[in-house]
Length: 106
Image (cartoon, rainbow, N blue to C red; front, side, top):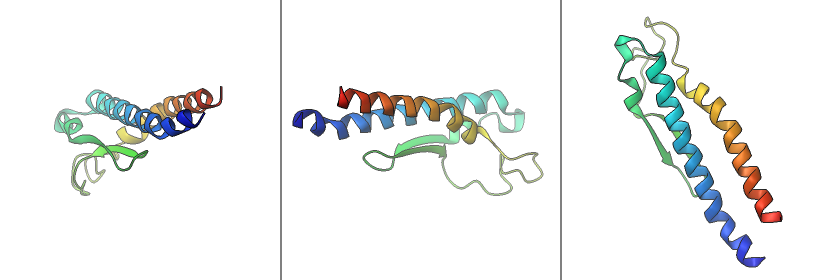
């Protein structure tokens, strides 16, 4: 049991990394499908990174000023690619986290 508990942080980090990468892919896929001609390459600004042992994030690299594509200023509504990808990925992440917890208990 001690060996299983000791391996949990490594496995948790792998679960987080996999879900962050999948969230990035979802955001890029949504951005490519939703962008008009002026923002056709905006999806390339999206990156992901692990910010800690079991934390990570994905989103646009660099500041998105109010005048940038997706900023919502005179270019239409704000960019919602990241919240949409988060909605999709949250369900998968919670399932993966529950599966990891179940594997530790059984």
